[in-house]
Every structure is written in structure tokens, then in C-alpha cells.
Image (cartoon, rainbow, N blue to C red; front, side):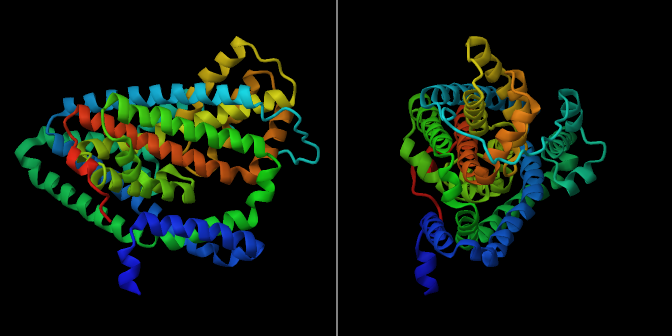
Length: 414
């Protein structure tokens, strides 16, 4: 039995668990609460890896570069590509929101308003990048401060030269150990995915989703189009690489992203598939992917754009070019500042909705309408975000000569 189980490719086991979870959750209903703990254990195991993996791989990646200037080149290319893909995501979201008009004819009667969360200012976000206590940042899992400190620490090792060689070698060894632990944790993925999907379909399921089928259809279609056209176009048309090989190699990370709804929780798996399946070098995976998990939110950009138009259509707000431009600009900032955790973006809608003339009370109604089934929408947003991270990392890796094309084209390593 064990031989057969491990003989089946991991992505097939995860996909089978996902569909089985949908069936069991739909049939069992609220009873799936009793197995939710299995999914929680899996998510906790992945979260356990996030901070040590980000810190060790980032330090090891900078040490492997040997030149701080190369980090600047990688960072500029990554941020530039993330902004470009986000711009395309916004255009796709606004286009589908206009064509499909998911808010037309929707009634919000009986919806319970949800309180809105206050968001930090841009100044506070920028100040928050620099940790006053790196140890506290590591303990609390604050990703951007961890990245900032790890970059400085890695540069310090490189600048120190031969004296710090043993420290750099140690971090490379620890980073390899963390990746091996990731492979072990991934063997639990089918059981965790089964429990998580069963819980979602059994407690929030497709009955709730049906009440906003138009909104859900617009989002799923937008995300699929974005991955096929933008991410696939970047791989196939710009990089001249086989698109099928990319999506095949990314599948494990996509499955975990769909079940956890968290780019940060998926990060260990994203780094693993980037290294082993897509042939991207350590200097790129250890810098571009942690950055992407924090700032690259293509799915969120599509979502906020569509929901903004949904709200405008529900309340009869006239839409002109200025409105679209306002939504696009604010959505760009919001998607970059969104926490990489489940359903975080739903509480960031107030900034966009307020800018197009929708008041606090109406915004609370929109949040109350979307929130019951947002997890199902969030799952697809996260898949899009993670796919974007891998597409950009592939592009940066190839441009920086940190890319093994033979590994990219080969079958995924299980």
C-alpha cells in the first residue's frame, strides 16, 4: 500500500484529495468540523517553515551571489515585472467587471454589515520595513522586516570576505536542510488539502457561492485568463520556454495555494518547486519569491477591481474614465500592501470604494455580502499570486543566468 501511495506523483495525490474533499464536504455538511484539525495541522507545519526558510535561503542566496550589485539587479527586475503583471491584472479585472456586470440586479437585503479595519498609512508601512528588533521580527513572522534584515546580513557576510566564509557556508547548509524538511512536510499535503477543502465546501460551500455566482465567475475567469495570457505569455512569448513545462512544474505549489489561501504559507513549497522543478537558481528563488509573497498580488488586484465595479453596479454609481483610473491607481497600492494571509484583501476595499463615492455603511454591506464565501474566492486569488511569483522568478532567473533549462523542461521531481 505504501509503495503504491508513494509511487503516485504528489500533484496527483493532492488533486485527488482536493476533489474527494469537495465531495465529502458537500455530503457531510457541518460534520466536517470534526476533521478540520487535520488541515490546521498541515497549515501549521507549513507556517513553521516560513520564517526560517525565508531567512536562511535569503542569506544563503546573497552569499552565493558574491556581489551585492547582483542583488540590486535581481531586485529591480523583480519589482519591475511584479508591477507590470499587476497592471495587466487590474486591466483584466476592470474589463471583466464591466462586461459581465456581476453587481447588476443583486439585492443586499438581509446582509449583516461587517466592520472595516483601519489600514496603516504609507509612511507607517515604509517605517515598518526596518525592524527595530530583528529577533522580535523573526519571532512574530513579519516578512518584510525579515527580508530587510536578511539582505543586510547576507551583504555583511559577502563584504566580510574570507573571515565570514564559514558563516556563509553554514547558512547554505541550513537552507538545504530547510528544503529537505519542506519535502517531508509536503508528504502530508494530500491529507491536509482533503481536510481543508472538505471544511470549506461543507461549511461555506457552494450554496453560499450561488448567491454571488456572477461575482465568483468573474473572478475565476479573470484569474484563469491572467495566468494563461500574462503568466503564460511571459513564459512562452518573452522567454521562449514551453508553457506546459512551467505550469506542470508549478502545480504542487498551486494546489497548496488553493487549499491554504495564503501566499506566505505556500512559500516553502513555492521555493521548492522553483528550485527542483523549474530550475531557478538559489540567488533568485531566495530573494524574488519571498518578496513576491509580500508585494506581488495579481489575484488581489483582479479581485479588488471586480468587487469595486460590483459595488458600483449594486449602488448605481456612475462609472467614467476617471473612476476607472482611480480604481486602477488605488488597487495597485492596495494589492502591494496586502498581507499574504487568507481573506486579508476583503478588508482593504474601503480605500477603493470610498474613493469612488461609496460610503462606510454601503462598504460594510458589500463586505458583509462577500465575506461568507470569500474563502472560495481567496483560494483562486492565491493560486494566481503564487503562479505570478514563479513566472517572474523564472524570467529573472533566466536573465541573470541563474536558470537550468534542462531542469525546467524535465518532468517534475517528486
